[in-house]
Length: 450
Image (cartoon, rainbow, N blue to C red; front, side, top):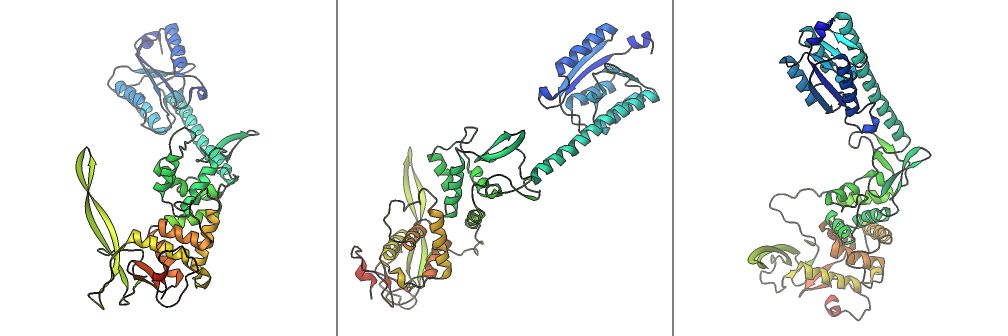
C-alpha cells in the first residue's frame, strides 16, 4: 500500500482487555493505547476514533464497544482499525467473520497491529483468520484444561470455590485445601443438633441473631442461608460439583457433623402431605377419651378478635384450639372444653407422675427417646426445658415433645405410650389401671387415679 493510500485511511484505535484482574493481562488498556498512539505519530496514521473496553472476546456479539465499532465501520465513519494484536479484536468465529465480511465489502480496508498489517488480499485475510483462530483455540483449550483441573481436584476430595460457613480456605504446601473454621464450626454443629431436635429454620435464625453470630465477611446470617446450610451435604463429608447437576464426591475435609445427624435433620425438614381441603389437623385428636361418656375427645378451633395498641387501635385475629367430648352418646355431657395450651401443661404434669416402668411403649417411641438423648447431650441447651428438674430421659423427652414438638411428633408420642387416657373436668386420668408413681407434689393426683 503506497503513502497516498495510507493517508486516505481513517483509523479507529481499539484497545481491549478481558474482565479479569489487571495483573493477569499481557498489557493493560492504558499501555496498549500509549503504544498505539506513539506508533500512529511515528507513522503519521490518521486516528479519528479511540475505543476502549474491558470485556472478554470469548463469545460472539457480546462486546458493546466492539459492536459500536462494527456499526461505525459500516456507516463509513472510518475504514481501518489500529489495535495491539489480532486477538484483541476476536477470539471467536462470529466476530472474526464480521470483520472479514467488511473487508470483502471494502468497508474495512486495513487492520494494523504493532508488528503486522492485514489488507483486503487473500493471503493477508487468510493469515488474519489463522491468528484469530489460534486465539480461539487457546481459549477453548484453556476451558478444557480448567474443567479437567477442577474435576481432578474434586476427585481428590477438595471442593472448588469458597468454603461454606464453618470452614475456611487455606494453602498448604502449595495446595489449596479446606479446614474447619475454629470460630464458627461449633456454632454450625449446634445448628444441626437443634434442627434434629425439631427447631425450625426461623428458630435457628433467631438464635443466631441473639447470639450475635457473624460470618467471615462480618455479616449476619440470613434465613435462606440457614436453610441452605441445613441441606448441605458438605458438612458430613460429601459434595456435588457443579452444585446441582454434578456427581457426588467424597470430601477430604474434616466433617463437622455425622451422616446420621444430617439424616435426622432432613427427616425434620420434610413437608407433611397436604391435608384434604376443609379438613383440620389437631395433635391430640382421637387420642383422649371423655371420662363421662367414653367417646373420643375431638379438637376444634376458635377465632377471636384482639385489639393491638400501636399508634392507633387495630385488631388481629387470634386462633385458639380446644378439645372436648363429641356429645354423640350424651348430648348434655358435662365435661368442659379445655384449651390446648392448658391440656399440654396437664399432660406434662401427668407424665412427671407416671411410673414409666409399667408403660408398654412402642419400639418406635423407645428409639425416639434414645435419639433425643444422644442429640440433646451434645447441645448447649434444650429449648424450654433447660431449667426444669427431670428424673429420666423419658420425662425429658415428654416435656420437650409436648411443648416444642410438631403436630406429628406429639401425635406419635401419644400413640407410642399405649395408655388409655381420658379427660375429666379438665384433668388427665387413666381409665383402666394405675400407672401413677408415689410423688406427692402433684395437685391432680386424685383426679388421675380410678
